[in-house]
Image 1 (spheres, rainbow, N blue to C red):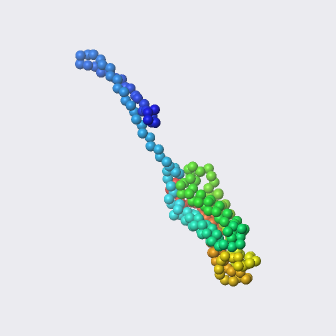
Image 2 (tube, rainbow, N blue to C red):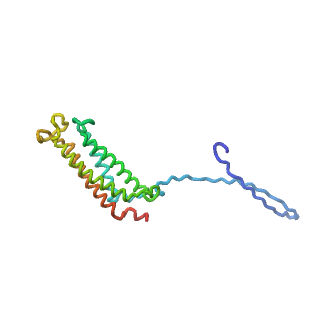
Image 3 (cartoon, rainbow, N blue to C red):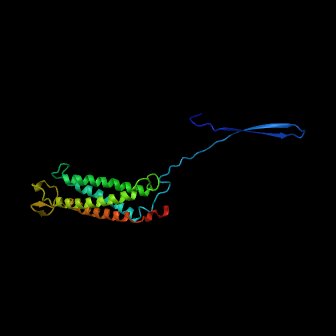
Length: 211
């Protein structure tokens, strides 16, 4: 070892030549060989699936992530009488589920984009998980849409002055616009995940170049 590096190996070669006067001369040559190795970092076998983000499956996943962030922002933007900065208990469940769905949706997006379903994580049942995950999300977001629409009316509050939104009077309470929009986007997420479940059952056209 010299200077923290590896000393290249030496190789000796011996050969004999004959001089004009008939004598033989032995020659010894020492050669030091040097090898250079390049480290290459590859993800997903070195190829990314750039067609996925432009496919209907990839576009749906990107929209689902964006809509999920919009829902979280709308629900948490109103300060009311709930246990968590005005958030009601049912909305706490909505936020937790939406956050979990966001993480798994992002995982699917990254996994398909870097071809992890064909390389490093090919043992994982991607298609089965994709189908059941999308179906479960579609069902729960439909339920959450109905719940959030009820919350947006303000009819649940005993003291309407505690509601932090402004809007129309409904059963003596005010319509909370932020939560009403959140209910709309929850219904939109229901439709998006239902479409993702449907597309997950079909042949993946974005994988054609890798078959």
